[in-house]
Figure (cartoon, rainbow, N blue to C red):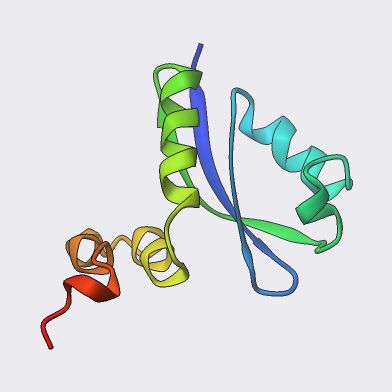
Length: 97
């Protein structure tokens, strides 16, 4: 069973990251206010990024990984700027002084 990681942009400009086995159905649920409480309060939402996986557990693992990222790192992923991801993974204690 395939799985999907997805990122939605909410009406207030924030991002929501999730995973599902049926991307079309899940998007419809979010748009109808039946998705997460977070998106229900920030409608409408728009799909801005997705990745397909062979199994749902892989998509779920990736969701947890991406949820821990900051906005700039998520935007690099969304924009296909994969070369920026390692630098954006550094925390403030890792930058030279």
